[in-house]
Amino acid sequence: MNAEKPFLGIIGGSGIYDLNDISEAKWQSVSSAFGDPSDKILTGIINDINIAFLPRHGKSHNLLPSNINYRANIDCLKSLGVTDIISLSAVGSLKESIKPGDFVIIDQFIDRTFARIKNFF
Image 1 (tube, rainbow, N blue to C red):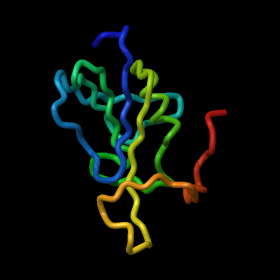
Image 2 (image 1 turned 135 degrees about the vertical axis):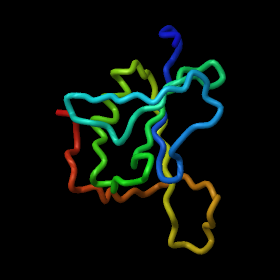
Image 3 (image 1 turned 90 degrees about the vertical axis):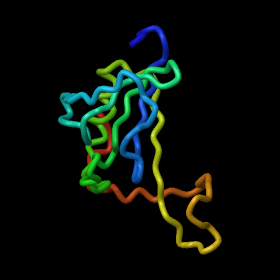
Image 4 (image 1 turned 30 degrees about the vertical axis):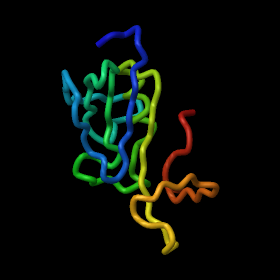
């Protein structure tokens, strides 16, 4: 992988457990001082961009939001050389007017992951 280019980290949320069209694909076990990440990290190249993909809830969707070791996730991506991160997530709505597939930009946020450590320090 070319270290001079940006290295994009992608953290996939519910429903995003793998990437298509990735060349030089390799699942890697990585750990950090914060422990193990949610799962192995898939590295490779898509359209000439270095990629590291991590399924947030694990490939088998076995981690609840409060059990995700986000500090290890970020630290492990950094240790691989990731320079930028996009984190994808999907949630439902209680409004009938918002249907599956609609794109919404939130203006309110309720963090229900109260049982985890809040920072790196």
